[in-house]
Length: 157
Image (cartoon, rainbow, N blue to C red):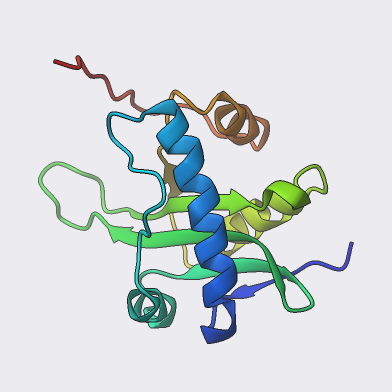
């Protein structure tokens, strides 16, 4: 596999939009009460701003010019925050591998890159949220070694 993992740049905007659309459709299918299909999460300019911000690093898995996957991350610093320990966390806000690239271990390579990046920054942990309507994603994260640390609950009215 000749997949390269790197920070996202302007050349990746179209590919990242495509992946964000795939994520949206999974969420909209599972929770149509919350997600509207056919919408865009970010404008091109918003994406470029996120890409350029070191507090919100975005990594892409690419093969040549094609974006196979992405990981949107957010650095969180819990220093002197109420009763928290002094920890730095890397939160994965969104991670996706293109439907046509699944089964090629792109997600594993991308996830491991995020883990290595967080370790390099001296982070205490890497966290993310996974929707209950996406059991495949939950199984992937568990296979990567993630464990639940809190559970979000709701009662739809």
